[in-house]
Length: 253
Picture (cartoon, rainbow, N blue to C red):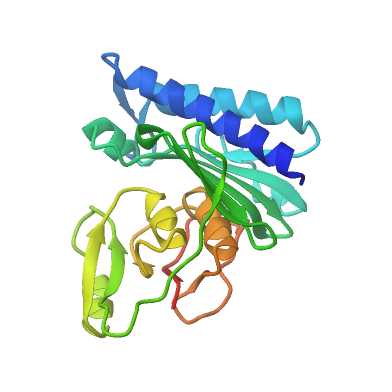
């Protein structure tokens, strides 16, 4: 995919993010989906913008999105390329209005994320990249700036990204085994951006995530020189029969 195409997709993500911020200014309502997760007009509006744009730009590439129904595995297991989209990652953060929510768009090829775009509406920032693309940050109307993961300097504590979610005994045990470290709390896929730009060094996750929560960040982290694997170091699978992820660790180490 050419750089001009990627920048056009960044523009789509930015439009979706602007629509999310517009909804945030209104007296929006919160509905509950079948799995008890919250959904708002912002999720649906962002989904509509992204789905329309991707369909117009790439009519031959199917879309798997959190908000627009999931295709049966019998069909999608034959897909060699598809878009994996979370139109609003961090709906709970959006509802609390703490600013840490994102728009996630990933292009999958043969079960691997090859391009990821994460837009952070409240910061007017976009992160994008992939394993063969490098990784970049776009702030406002600035030119894209390359970003890279960073290992701790000698004597520097390992900075570990953690969610704002509930305490997790498995995470506590994992952290207890680390050398000197400090925790950095952040919401949604923004933690992948912090890792890709060198702000944190490690992002372990034991709690539940879905494939559209991780794919874009996975691509960007790999583009920035890091990696994301299952806890045992094995490759992290996508387009699974069940789209729920197991534990993972994203790392610069």
